[in-house]
Image 1 (cartoon, helix red, strand yellow):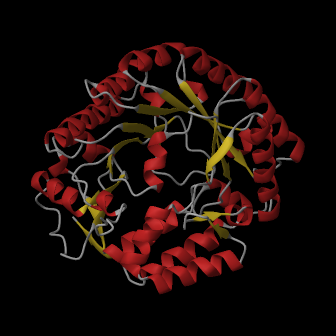
Image 2 (cartoon, helix red, strand yellow):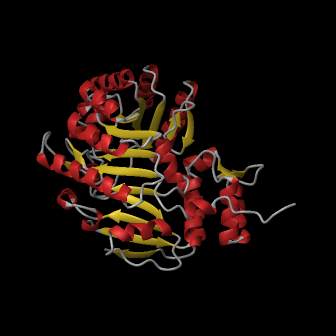
Image 3 (tube, helix red, strand yellow):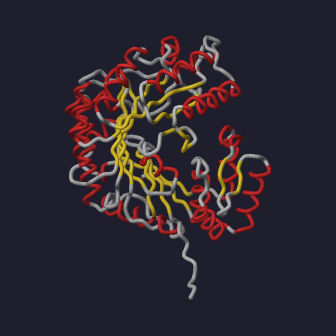
Length: 424
C-alpha cells in the first residue's frame, strides 16, 4: 500500500525553536586592516566587555524561557575576539549557554594574542568543546600587512596550547594576502598540518570598501594578488590539506572525519538559528518568529505569506549592554515566502560538498516548479559548475567551487521576488 509522498524538507520550515545559537562579541585588541565586521578596538579589562557579556547571558536565559531555544544543540561564540573577554567573563557566558543542556558542540573564537592556558582551562571547565583560532598566516610580513597583532611564533604557541587542552581545534587561514607567495603559502599550510590540526578554514582575502586595506590598495601602497592567483592558492590548500587527511565539506572548510563544525553546517542546511548581540543575525520559521513576538511585541506583524523570517540586531554595544531583555533590542526584519526560502536553501546547499540533497531538490520542485528548477540545474551542469547525482540531487564541481558566486546567483534568481523588509 502506497501513501502520498511527504516532502522531507518541509518540516524544517515549521520548527518552532532555533536549533543553533550564535553570540556576537564585538571587541578586539585592534581593528585589522581588512576587517569590515562589527568589531571595535577595546582595551583589555574594559568594563564595557563585562557589562555586554552579562547582557548576553540574560538574553540567552530569556530566549530559553520564551521557548526560542528548546531544540538547540550547538552554540558558537564569535566576534570580534571572544578570547579578549578573559577567562572569568568568557567562561561565565559559556557556562550560561551550556548549563544542563547537553549540547553537541560549543565553539568559541580566539585570536592567538589572547588565548592563554588559563582561558582554555576555564572554557573547557565551563563546557566548551571547540575553539576556532584566527591564525591567518604563519609569515610575519603577511601578518603585519593584514594588521594582525600576533606574530607566527605566538600563533604556533596558541595552536599548541589549544591542542593540548583537549578541545577540538579549528585554524582559520587566509590566502591572496599582499606579498604572499606560493612558497610562503605552502609553508603556512604544511606547518599547521604538522601540528596535528584536524579542521582548517581557508578564506581568500576580500578587499572591502572603507577598510584600511582598501585605502592602501587605492593609494598604491599595497598590491593584492588577482583572482587567478587566489584561486591557485585555494587549489594548493585543497591538495596539501587532502594529503594530510582533511576533506573539504563546505566551500571554505576542511576537516578530518568526525571533526566538521556541526554548528556551521546548520547555516547551510535550512536549520533555524538564533543570534544575540550587536549585528547578530537570526533565521527563524514563521512559527518561531511568533514566539519571538511574545517577548518582543514591537516586532512587525508577519505577512501571512512568510514561512521564514531573518532578523539582524541593530542595537549598538551600549544598547545591548543595557538591555534587560530581548524587548529592549532593535532589529531589521526580512520575511521570505516559500518560494524565496526554497531558492535560498538551494543557494546555501550548493556551498556544501554534498550539494543540494535529493530531499531539497524535491522540495524546490514542489515549491518553485519543476520547470524552472530543472532548467537552472541543467544550465549549471552545462556550464560545468555542477553535476547531477544518481539520486536526483546536484553537487558542485571543482569549477563550481572556484566560481561559486556564479552558481549561487543563478539559484537565488529562482526566488523571483523582492524580500519584504522592515525595521523595529
